[in-house]
Length: 242
Image 1 (cartoon, rainbow, N blue to C red):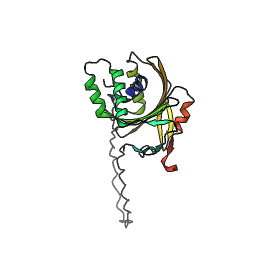
Image 2: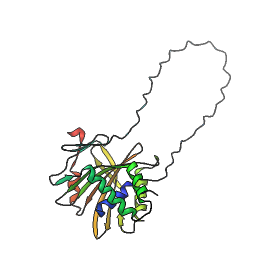
Image 3: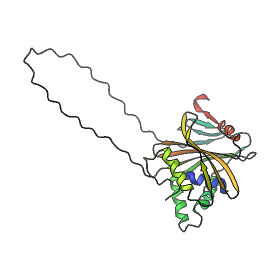
Image 4: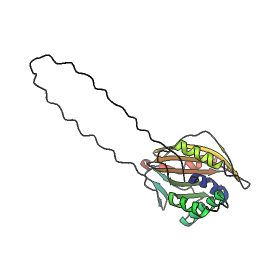
């Protein structure tokens, strides 16, 4: 099974897509015909004019538009927020983000004979859009996306897949809290906090997930001290408030 990009995010943070099932059931209903009794002869009334109902607008399909790096940080209109790095934060380059993903894949896949093929699959379905690291505290923010193999999967099922997959990584021990909700910008995310330990390192991480069409958007906030978590959230601002 392919690992979720979220699994690689966790591994990458400590070491340096989703094959799930989903079914969409379409309810079916059959209207039974009701017998109409024979009408008694009567004068034919003059019918009242019937108003023509206004056509119902067909909603446009919602699709995800990737965020954009700016001089001041990062803007994501699909998720409705601006990210402004704090004073001590450094933003990773495209090359550094690619290296981070490679580190995570190496950690998770290990010496698997098909590791190159697995990494290629990850690169085709997943992307890091932003990596920001606070050089003073070591806390970080990673924003990424994954194109889901099965469109029917939701955020809660995605979290369950992460839990199952991380439990198979012998070199890493992860403890999960119960999922909840977190609002950033104009979007309410499904969030889960967990503690991951590997290579003598330990990190608390909060992962925020939002599915848009067949794209799973994720924000991973990593911190060694829980007091750093609110400072990371403060980097996010609602676009409409600016």
